[in-house]
Every structure is written in structure tokens, then in C-alpha cells.
Image (cartoon, rainbow, N blue to C red; front, side, top):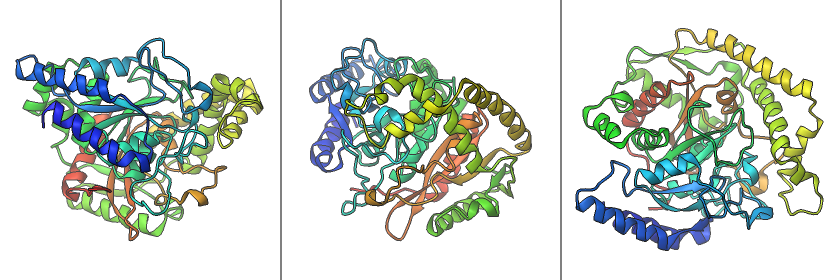
Length: 441
């Protein structure tokens, strides 16, 4: 598909679907078509930049583009004009990507359900009759990719915000290792834990977008694609001989029965491909890591946004306010102690991972939840926050549908800076699973 056709297809999907789904905060239709026409001329005249040239993508609306408004999902920032373009956005644009627009987000990216009281909650596309959680905080990015309104999208992940919407929307989401990708020009929530990452419909697409976000030269990326080297080589290496950790009995109890069945079936597929599955009993429970992560996110979130939420007069999201103000009660001793404890816990956990290539969990313990049943005082990030707390990278890959036709995601957690292993396992499973359906053909 040439760039004009690709962009026109996305824009037509946006026109026909986004009125109901509400994934986009803003669409740059004229600029996207102009960019597509320019990309088409460049490609046909021998000036193609590389494999991302002409690919339509979307940005989560916490990522700055110079001269454009970045709301951060907040009604209080409807006129906030970005002073400069975030490095990751510059890299995608420099590689020839076509920016379609900005996608909706939980206010200041603080929440895993994907809801936004004032700016609108994107509708999970797998159930058009019942409004369900899209996953957050990169809610609009997940919905836009799942429905073909964007070829791919940028999300950010502080406690699961790439993987949660990937799991609930039935797409691929890569949580990158902290510090690997630049975060300048991205509205911070937790500067310790924030990580941008690609959201796509396949593992191979995630690898391509990740390479661009890393800033690799497009000729190097194209060479690796054609020769099967680098990260692209990992896509075909398979899992034979890999030792993979699976949930113990205690962790299995928290998982919905249908999600657990999908998880067990996915693990068996990997076993049939030659992987060795071993029950993993780590030194910390996932619930403990979820709580420990909350102290860091709460403290740093309050540092960055506390003043906004302390004001009773501003129209902030009432569900986000208590999460941010939680940091008000954290002392310097609490915060610094949490960071020090994290370093100790990371060392202990990495030691327990010796001999394992990766850990396998469900991405989310339940299918998408009806919005009127969400308990905003809780988080769906039971399995995802561990990746952030431990400094791991993680991939969510769709593993199937429940009886209600709702997706479940398989989370693959690998060591920090070992994205190659995460995508290797994900690609092997994806190939065995076969094509995954679209929620809206």
C-alpha cells in the first residue's frame, strides 16, 4: 500500500469509527494527506528514506509536537502549546512517518483503566454495546491501532500503560527498558519509571517502530530487515531450548478463569515449540511489587502535578485527583527509602531469574471491565507494574478471545535491555497462534 492509500484508509476509518470510539483528541487530516502525497512522490522518485517512510502513526497526547497543543488529557491544558518536539516524535517524523493526530489519554497518564471524566473515555472496540475499559493510560493509542484508525501509535508505560491497553484491545505493545528511549518532550508522571514504547498490530511492526524510536539509521534498519540480523533476526529464532517461568498457584488464583485458560493454552503452544516451562517462585509477590511501585509513582506524580490537583477550583479528573494527592502524604524518607529498596529488590529478583529467559503472565488478570463496574480506587496493573519496578522490558501479545469475544494478552517479561528476547518469544508465539481478528472489520 502506498503512503496516500495508507493514510486515506486510516482517515476514512477515523471518519467512520471515531465518533463512536473516541480514540483521538485531535486529527491532523490536511497535514497528514499533504505528508502522504509528499512521501509518495519521494518514494516513486527514488528518495525513499527507509522502511518507515509513509507509515501513518499517532501520538499519545502527552507527547509534544512544536506548535501543537498537548493537553495531557486534562481540561486545564486545552491551550497548552508545545514549545518543542519530543525526540521520539522527531525520530518518527524524520524517518518519514505520517502523523495522523494525537490520541486520548488518562489525565496526566495516571491510571490503568483508561478512563477520562472530562475529556472522554475511548470505547473498547471489542464490545460496541457495553462501554468497557480500553486500558490506560495509553487508551486512545490502543483503540486507534486495534481498529485500523492508525497503522501504529506511541504509548508510554509507567506501570503498564502500553501493555494494559494492548492486552484489552488485542494488539501488541512493547514496554521498553527504562532509559533506553529519550523522554524529553513527554509530559512526566514518574521520571524514574516512565518509558515510551510502540503499539502495533504485530511483533514485527513493533520491532520496526522501536528501531525508529531508538534513532537507528534507516539504512541500517532496512539492511537488518533484508538480512534477518539484529532485532529482526530474533523474530525467527524460535523458543526451542528456552526456559520460561510461569505463574505459581498463588498468582493463578487472581486470574479470571477464561483468561487463565487462554494463558495456559498459550504456554502450551510455546512448550510445543520446544520451550521448557518451569513454575517460577520469585522473592516478591506481584501484589507487593504493585504496592512498591505506587510509592514511587505517587511521590513523583505529586512532584510534577501536585499543584494542579491541590486546587479545588480547577476542572481536574476526580478519579485522578486522589491518586496524585496520595503523594502528598509521602515524606522524603518514604520516597528515598522506596528507591533504595527498589535497587535491593531488583538485585534479588534478577538473581532468582538465573537460568530463565523470561517470565510469562497474563497481561491483565481479567477481560475488559464494563465502565460502570470499575473501582477507581484499584488498579488493573497487578502483573504489569512488576516490569517497571524491576527494570525489565515487556511485551504484550494477543493470545485469544473469551466467550464474550474479549481479548486476553500474554505478557512476556525479559531482563532490562533484552528486548530481543521479548520479541523473539512473542514472534514465535504469534506465528503459532496465527492471524488475530480485528474487532471491527
